[in-house]
Length: 193
Length: 202
Image (cartoon, rainbow over all chains, first blue to last red; front, side, top):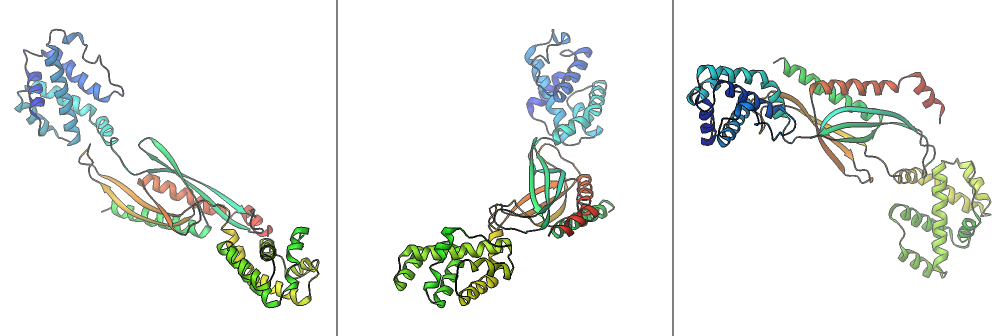
């Protein structure tokens, strides 16, 4: 894994037994994962009693480095050997590597989901609703006597939802459904490859 | 169904017997152009000058004719009812037949123009799709997410003949849900309830 110099230095401090004893190391690892997974930023996240003896700047640097390392590992879908060798290069003891890796395994899925939800995309269809109507007449024309469908596609994009509404005749709806069924068949075939 | 013509309307149309049959035919043509493209004052002025009558008379005559045509087309009046409706104007048999011919020749065209008037919702035109697999994004690498990307073509809601298209995505399970939902919609047309209504309201 490629890490910047400041991240490397921060992690090296975390590995250092004289800077972080066993208890404070464990707490910092927990706090790092927790601060990534919580939905609100917590300014008091580093106000743990175990950190009282530690230089506050060093503490912040190590926390930032740990958080960056975690995100990069999740992003790259890093496996155990990648993480272990990166940490060992940064002077982590086998014990501390193990603690870090088991926390990573425990939270990896949730972090993946969080990362996947960041970013822009196309509007995503979540549902469809329909109405069948019979158009009898309107202000300009009498005796229309036509049936038609009103379709509404509910879409979501980055939290905001939008409905796409349109009308169609029976034939057009059959066309639409036919094409969707083709797509589904293709999808099924592809999944068996 | 008989058309009921207002006094004002009858007055406007009373201009027609005073001119030649050819002129009535010409007015009919102008009236249809009016429906298709809107009124053109120059045409009225030209006609008024040739016939030596005031412009308003020409304009009212054309508009009256047009209104007669649109009302008849709107209600899809039968031949008999049309003739009975214009009887009240007291025109000659020849003129009545001319008006009837004008109606018969153009009523479906007029109906089609009228049906574009009400503002409509976007209507489905076409759907294009493709199957994609998302492999990575800026925040996460090594993904394997199948997606259906679609382009839905809809007509524009102001009735212009060009199309709007929207690009949308969905996942495999939602796709199956969409298919079953819309198939249920199609099935609704085949119920006895729907068939009964469609058969009886004509």
